[in-house]
Image (cartoon, helix red, strand yellow):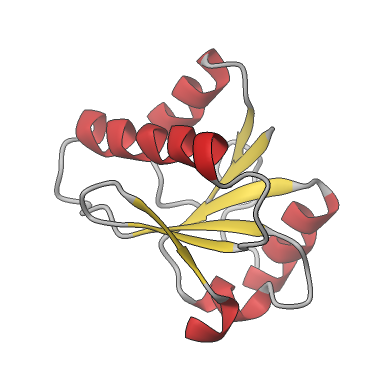
Length: 122
Protein backbone atom coordinates (compact mmCIF):
# COMPACT_ATOMS: atom_id res chain seq x y z
CA UNK A 1 0.00 0.00 0.00
CA UNK A 2 1.16 3.51 -0.81
CA UNK A 3 0.90 6.58 1.38
CA UNK A 4 1.61 10.22 0.63
CA UNK A 5 1.99 12.74 3.45
CA UNK A 6 1.12 16.41 3.17
CA UNK A 7 3.80 18.88 4.21
CA UNK A 8 2.54 19.42 7.77
CA UNK A 9 3.15 15.81 8.82
CA UNK A 10 6.41 14.90 10.53
CA UNK A 11 8.99 12.92 8.60
CA UNK A 12 8.91 10.48 11.53
CA UNK A 13 5.53 9.19 10.27
CA UNK A 14 7.06 8.52 6.85
CA UNK A 15 9.96 6.64 8.46
CA UNK A 16 7.67 4.56 10.68
CA UNK A 17 5.35 3.62 7.80
CA UNK A 18 8.36 2.59 5.72
CA UNK A 19 9.69 0.49 8.60
CA UNK A 20 6.32 -1.28 8.67
CA UNK A 21 6.79 -2.17 5.00
CA UNK A 22 4.62 0.49 3.37
CA UNK A 23 5.69 2.66 0.48
CA UNK A 24 5.45 6.20 1.83
CA UNK A 25 6.39 9.52 0.30
CA UNK A 26 6.30 12.99 1.82
CA UNK A 27 5.66 16.31 0.07
CA UNK A 28 8.96 17.63 1.45
CA UNK A 29 11.17 14.63 0.68
CA UNK A 30 9.71 14.47 -2.85
CA UNK A 31 10.50 18.13 -3.48
CA UNK A 32 6.83 19.04 -3.91
CA UNK A 33 6.50 21.64 -1.16
CA UNK A 34 4.46 24.60 -2.33
CA UNK A 35 2.87 22.95 -5.38
CA UNK A 36 -0.84 23.49 -5.90
CA UNK A 37 -3.44 21.26 -4.32
CA UNK A 38 -4.62 20.23 -7.80
CA UNK A 39 -1.12 19.07 -8.71
CA UNK A 40 -0.97 17.05 -5.49
CA UNK A 41 -4.34 15.43 -6.28
CA UNK A 42 -3.12 14.58 -9.77
CA UNK A 43 0.10 13.08 -8.39
CA UNK A 44 -1.56 10.96 -5.70
CA UNK A 45 -4.29 9.83 -8.10
CA UNK A 46 -1.74 8.72 -10.71
CA UNK A 47 0.26 6.82 -8.09
CA UNK A 48 -2.61 5.25 -6.12
CA UNK A 49 -1.75 6.79 -2.76
CA UNK A 50 -3.67 7.08 0.47
CA UNK A 51 -3.22 10.74 1.31
CA UNK A 52 -2.68 12.14 4.83
CA UNK A 53 -3.62 15.81 5.20
CA UNK A 54 -5.01 18.34 7.66
CA UNK A 55 -6.54 20.39 4.85
CA UNK A 56 -10.32 20.16 4.33
CA UNK A 57 -9.95 21.66 0.85
CA UNK A 58 -8.80 18.30 -0.49
CA UNK A 59 -12.19 16.75 0.32
CA UNK A 60 -13.76 18.72 -2.52
CA UNK A 61 -10.88 18.15 -4.92
CA UNK A 62 -11.01 14.35 -4.85
CA UNK A 63 -14.66 13.91 -5.83
CA UNK A 64 -13.79 12.93 -9.42
CA UNK A 65 -11.09 10.47 -8.35
CA UNK A 66 -10.84 7.41 -6.23
CA UNK A 67 -8.32 8.74 -3.78
CA UNK A 68 -8.55 7.61 -0.18
CA UNK A 69 -7.97 10.60 2.07
CA UNK A 70 -7.07 10.56 5.77
CA UNK A 71 -8.08 13.94 7.19
CA UNK A 72 -6.28 14.36 10.49
CA UNK A 73 -7.70 16.15 13.51
CA UNK A 74 -4.88 14.99 15.78
CA UNK A 75 -3.72 18.10 17.70
CA UNK A 76 -0.39 19.52 16.53
CA UNK A 77 0.57 20.44 20.09
CA UNK A 78 0.97 16.78 21.06
CA UNK A 79 4.46 15.31 21.05
CA UNK A 80 5.45 13.90 17.66
CA UNK A 81 5.65 10.39 19.09
CA UNK A 82 2.06 10.58 20.33
CA UNK A 83 0.75 11.98 17.04
CA UNK A 84 2.58 9.29 15.08
CA UNK A 85 1.17 6.60 17.38
CA UNK A 86 -2.38 7.85 16.75
CA UNK A 87 -1.87 7.98 12.99
CA UNK A 88 -0.39 4.48 12.90
CA UNK A 89 -3.36 3.19 14.91
CA UNK A 90 -5.66 4.75 12.30
CA UNK A 91 -3.74 2.95 9.52
CA UNK A 92 -4.17 -0.36 11.35
CA UNK A 93 -7.87 0.35 11.82
CA UNK A 94 -8.24 1.11 8.11
CA UNK A 95 -6.71 -2.19 7.02
CA UNK A 96 -8.56 -4.16 9.70
CA UNK A 97 -11.99 -2.68 9.01
CA UNK A 98 -12.36 -0.47 5.95
CA UNK A 99 -9.93 -1.22 3.13
CA UNK A 100 -12.61 -2.99 1.09
CA UNK A 101 -15.31 -0.35 1.68
CA UNK A 102 -16.36 2.42 -0.64
CA UNK A 103 -15.43 5.30 1.63
CA UNK A 104 -13.00 7.86 0.27
CA UNK A 105 -12.67 10.15 3.26
CA UNK A 106 -11.66 9.13 6.75
CA UNK A 107 -11.34 11.60 9.58
CA UNK A 108 -8.72 10.76 12.18
CA UNK A 109 -10.19 12.21 15.35
CA UNK A 110 -8.17 14.07 17.96
CA UNK A 111 -8.02 10.80 19.91
CA UNK A 112 -6.78 8.91 16.85
CA UNK A 113 -10.02 7.11 15.98
CA UNK A 114 -10.70 6.52 12.30
CA UNK A 115 -14.14 7.75 11.24
CA UNK A 116 -15.43 7.07 7.72
CA UNK A 117 -17.25 10.02 6.16
CA UNK A 118 -19.49 10.40 3.15
CA UNK A 119 -18.24 12.69 0.40
CA UNK A 120 -21.34 14.91 0.67
CA UNK A 121 -20.51 15.67 4.33
CA UNK A 122 -17.90 18.17 3.10
